[in-house]
Length: 518
Image (cartoon, rainbow, N blue to C red; front, side):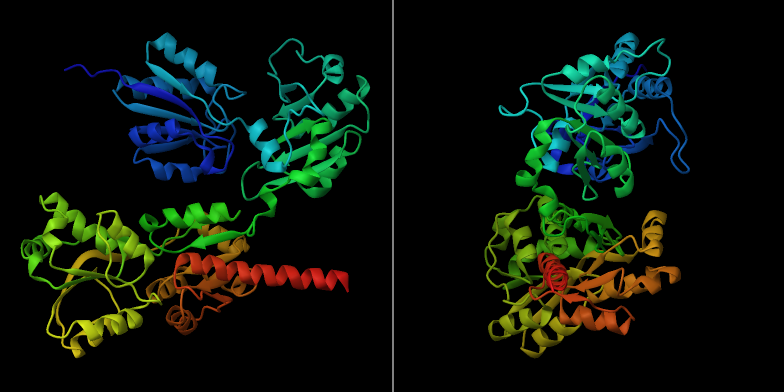
C-alpha cells in the first residue's frame, strides 16, 4: 500500500519572544507530526506541538552534532516522503538570511508540497525591542539588510562598502558579531563618519536582551567591554538615537530575571505567558506530573448519578477538566448538573468551570482550603456534597465539611506523580546560580523542590536563588523542608507570587537608587 506524500511548512518563529509567532505558524505547529527547529528558535514554542522535535545545528553545540544544510534538506524530504506533516521552524523569517529558500528549492526538486509561513525578521524586531525604528521620516527613508558573514566559498566579496557608506538610510548587519570591528573599519575607510551612531543588540526580544549604543569608531570596544555575545544584530544610522526616548522592553518590571516554574508542566502555560509579559524568562522545573486516574470506573459511576448531589466542590482546574471532560466524553453536558451548586477554591478553578459554560456559586475571598471550608460549612448540613480531587490532598476540607454535617463523597479524578529528577539544564542553572527566583505554589511542591535541588546548588539558596511562595501554608512547608523564603504572596495565586517578587525587586531597586544618590 503506497503512502501519500506529506507536506513541509517552512515557518518563521520570530527572533525569540514566543508571542511573535504568527497565528498561521501556531496552526502549523499544532498539526505537525515532525518539527525540525533551528538553534535560534525559542524552544518554549515546542509546547504548542505534540510532534517529535529535533534541534538542527549548523555549528556544534554541546553534545549536539553538526548538521550541514544538505543533511537538513534530506531530513525534510525523507519525513515528507513518509507521509508526515513536517514543520521546519526557523528563527526570524525563513527567507531573510535564513536559508529557507534553499530548503524550498530542495523540496521543489524532490516534488514535495511545501508552504512558506513568514515570520518577524530579526532586524525589525531587534530595533523595535531596543527602542528605535529602522525607518523614520526624519532619520532614514530606506533600510538595507546586509549579511555580516558572506559565503566563504565565494571568489570575491559581494559587499561594496563605498556603496554602503553612501547609502541614505539605516544599515542592518545580520550575523556580524565576529566581524564587528572589520565592518566598522570598512565603513569608516569607505567614508562613513566616525561619529555615526551604532547599536548592537544581542538576543533581541529575549529576556536576556542587551543593547550597546556607541559611535562607529568606538562600538567594537564598547561591545567587548559589555561582554555581548551572539546572536546579535548591528544597526548603523541616525535612527539609533531614538532609543533614549522609545526604549520600552528593557523597562518591564522583571526584565532579565529568571523565574523557575515548579508546578506541573501541563499547568504552566498561563505562568509562562505572564512571566514573559513581565520581561522575565520562565524556567520550567516541574516537580509534579498530572496523570489520569488509574481507572475511570469509579468516576463513571459517580457521573451516572451526578444529579443526586446538592454541591460539587472543585479545588483545582485539573479537577474541573477531568470530571467534566469525562462527563462530556460519556455523552453528558451541563444539564446533568442542574440541581447542584458549584464551589471553587479560587479564580483559576472558577475560570476552568466557565470553559464548560458554568458559573460558580462560592469562591472564598482567600484561596485556601480553610477559607473554602468556612464559606461552605454554613450551607452544607445534611446536603450531599461531591469533592472532585487529586489523589493527594490536605485533610482540612474533609474534616471541616464532615464536622458541619455534609454527606461528603470524594472522587479522585486525576493523580499527582512526583518528578524523579530535573533535566540536566535545570540542574546546571541551579548549580551555577543562573536562576533568580523559584515560585512554589503548594506544600507538596515545596517538599519536592527541596528534594530535587542538587546538593551542589544549596549554597545558592536565599542569596542568588530566592524562593517565593503562594501562601503561609506553603511558606511553612518550605521552612520545614529547609528552603529559605524571600517573598510570600498576599493573593494566593501564581499572579500573587509574581507580584510578591516584583515588590521585593522594586524595593531593592529603590534602595540601590537611594544608596547611589547618598
